Length: 118
Image (cartoon, rainbow, N blue to C red):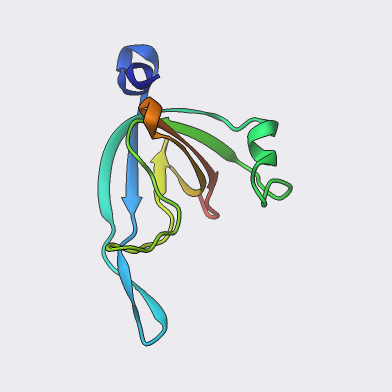
């Protein structure tokens, strides 16, 4: 899977990731300038089974499953807190809803939905 995810010969595609960075100031989130990452991955329509795994499954429209070698993030804390990663694919923006950790096997599967206005 790792080789497929990175190989342009095996249908992987260029993905641009907007990674949120920021901090809490006086109890409010202040967004900083996002980090831009250029990676490769495989994009496919989300299946009914994948959507059932999400609490939002009955409301999701325009869901895409992305398989990447690079780890993507939903809203996170830690040393560099931020909101969910945004993937730019085929000119549309998709916000991550869920990331399935397959890192031990060399890849990650993430479900994202198309953002309004795109």
